[in-house]
Figure 1 (cartoon, rainbow, N blue to C red):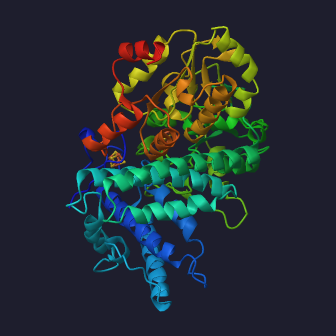
Figure 2 (spheres, protein in one colour):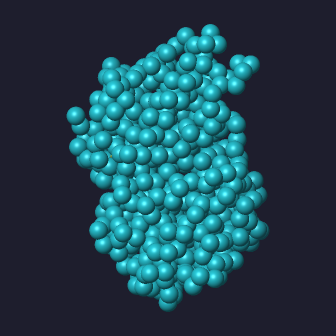
Figure 3 (cartoon, helix red, strand yellow):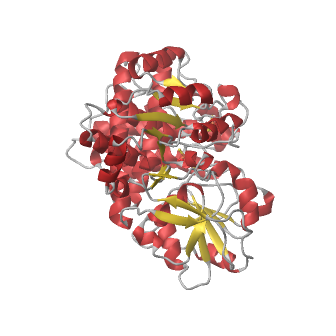
Length: 555
Ligand code: FSO
Ligand code: SF4
């Protein structure tokens, strides 16, 4: 029956995965994800209709379910058909309960799109797989290319937004405006009466809400763990058993640190967990010893050498090798068939990480991969506390330019472009980074400028928000009319859907001349690319030489 997915940068042939995902996602999971996405849209249609009615609609936890459902469908999160089927069934039950409740209240919405009404012939795996194609990304087949493209741009941006909102919610922070927006936007992209022009306005709103969501997560992280401080992170290993923690969920790491205190186990971060070392409430744990390895796509070889258990708290998980699958654990929305899953918290009680701890105690020390340290912790608070020093350096001409090189890393060889750009930028340039894109240039030893590392690492991909705050404050201090008048260039690398919301957030703030690579999204129709180029001067990356020359010239 095949599948169709083109939501990430590594999609097959730059067009779409139709047999199996390049990411390792198999056809049944891809199709169940389509069914789940459609059900989440249907739930949103009903949820919006129930708002404002005097009595409470069933299941008040529907908002959280929507966030987790969207997050689950992001690239490299969930590869398990069983958990996907369970989610589809829960979504279906929820949608039907809402529909019946509205029918009884005499308040069914007039417009009922397919997403609000479709059902399988039988509530079995086969039944759901059969019906999934009718609501997949290629449907409705007659949709104009631009409309389809914009619907998908919004849909993929919403996935990233939901992931960030979910991280904030885990820490007890929620913003009703974000929750409502996600439902409104999910409902809007089922509405056949909306034109490309209407949807462009939804893209703008999605970006604006993306900024708001990243600000919410920034508040959640910094209020819970303190403001990141400049920190040198150890890249080697220490004798003794270790646990490697990957993904973005700081609360999982925190609870694991608490539960491993005094047990002789060293905790290492991996990938997007690196920024954890800069948070005061996390760096205080002496057994949080260092960061192990590089970006997500290198995990096969590196997890093999780690020797101990590995916990995946969020994306990016790649198909595990037999050499370490027996010491891999997942939690939260991540899942791989047969890999033990640490269940969710019950209320405020922490997760129980004892299976990982027991495993660690049976394992030898990790093999070293690297040595030395890496400077991190340059989020808005720590950079802006040095604002006067930076402004003086700009005015004296010591710092000529900033280049925002945020986003994601990936497997493609063409991403060497980012390493080469970082090397070729003149020594009076500072690179502002966030997200796993940094692994392409954060260990090049590019030195310091004006007392700051030339690669200023603000944190995880969501901390791109920090880069925006820094740019806005600099604009204010330098008396610039807009952030486009600052000596800042944007050279963004994307891979999955969190990067889509980061991009939409930047565009909604009016940031112009963003370079995007290594390739443009397959889901952007030619007409939409044209519109983005015209409105925002968005540019596909060119050669290293051309781009560095134009960055240096301020073009
Ligand atoms: Fe990277 Fe993966 Fe953070 Fe993403 S580890 S690619 S954009 O999940 O979310 O930067
Ligand atoms: Fe293909 Fe990316 Fe979709 Fe995976 S997430 S199936 S690699 S487009």
